[in-house]
Length: 478
Image (cartoon, rainbow, N blue to C red; front, top):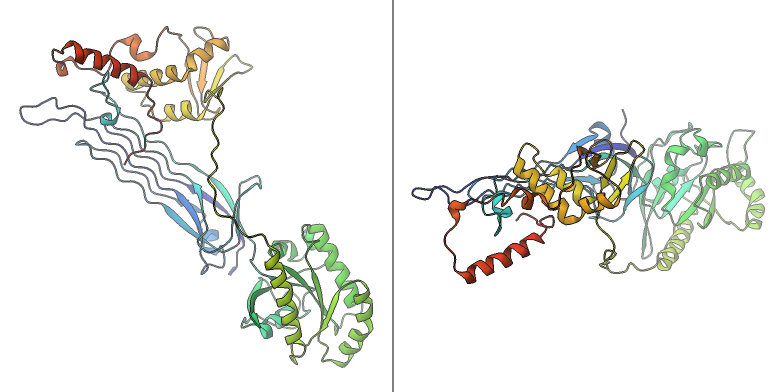
């Protein structure tokens, strides 16, 4: 049974926003009290957060489909719908988030680090929020937006200061067991270790973590053995420790050739050339092992390696090794640049940014793309003529109709708003004015009207001009 998983594909979906409500306030002796439809609630986000108590991605291996809750629809009486609950997924420290193509979306290091993997949809506005001086009684509300969904890949890269690398049965797990309180499985056959082991070592005032990388053999970077699966766990280390078996019983192997083979695999994997190396000659408690260590040590030192002789069984040379590693780790930590305080970066839009683009495709179809027009289409109830007219007003104010004219569109040409797999397509009919002005004062009920003095009429006309320039896309329900 699998107990350690360091790579999973996760299918996530944020919650949908709740629909706005179209309602008219009614009470005794006051049948037309004005619009009072509430806004829909926001859909819940899918959030990844680092939790130190989580050490594997096994939970998501068994349950890869995760969805946040939807926002509730608005109600009459100006009652807004409840927001959907965020779905918080705990991941181990050192988890990297990638898309399906392998692009890195986030690198989650440090307890409490969070990443919003999928944003919940906005709640739709109710007709109370859509009411204005020229639209006193809207008979429609906006739909809630669907939440973001998709597939992401989670990869765990162990956060360790020291990585032990070497052939199977070289003694890496034994070293971790005597240097720290870790209790890995130890046996005298290859590939005993099937998962990276992690231990904590204290040397003087320095506390650091040490991990072994199992299954490295020639060809590991191309998929042989277990190495390809676990090579990613050495990427974050500060120092590499080559553990060489000086008492191997295999006649075709020797410690120097083992070192060369492992270095070749690390070179093929890439990105580790700048890490300091230490060579540990293990099992020197055996007479043949001590003789071989004395024989190869000068050659290794000529190559520039610092060489230490240890025995995990006899527990000799461990103190020197632990303090040598602590010294390198301390220097590496001191050399790291200090993290700067979070800065807010303001990126103003270009003065010629219209918020949308129009392209003509080979079949003559004009396609409109942009955050605003696509969002407005998703919010529109196409079964309600007044809602469709409101969409026409918004697109007209944004300049879509003028842009279509400049692009060469003519009456009857096909226009699509949105991507190919999810677009609204219609035959374009140009107008001299936006939908609301063309169809009259839509959304008004003259039963709300009363004789107005001249000053009030001037004030209302000014309000109408101001309202024509307003955009509701930045409105967030309370």
